[in-house]
Image (cartoon, rainbow, N blue to C red; front, side, top):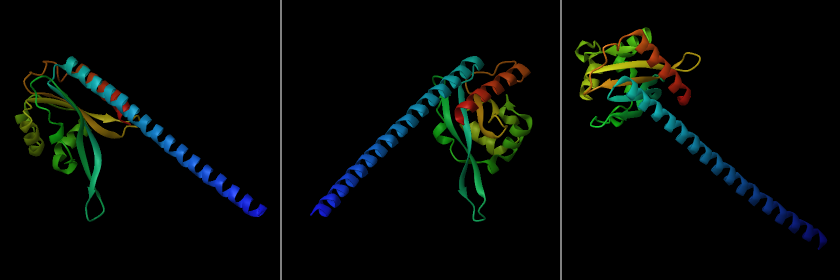
Length: 197
């Protein structure tokens, strides 16, 4: 009888310990998920504030971030390198294009990405002069008359995205191709890169 009582007591203690650990585990996961959501919300607020600042400083109509990602895989096993718009702010009366800028294959915009990487910027004040016809058609569809893009890099130099501004109704400033504008755009890309990693 005494042995059965000890066994029963051990079973009850084990059951209570299991329930307590499950409860604590769920509480920890909920808190962790909540913290992730809070962190993401703060990050998003900072990114959107930086994009709003960029619009104000450049006089552009649209500011956005495109992030590189690996999409599907080819039969060979090689990944499809893509980029998608993850953040966008627009001035009043300008179309929001973020939803239409998803899963672009890098290979379809080879000349654009090559120039962006090699030059460290991609600036066109006349979209008719853009050599990459696929890219030209995409931005014409968005109503873009001029644009400025710079790569977003991590601290070790890995390109993770593109920071861009579009001029739709507004004209680009006279000094858009100046070294000062280039340094400003690169600095903004560095700041935003810190939020994205």
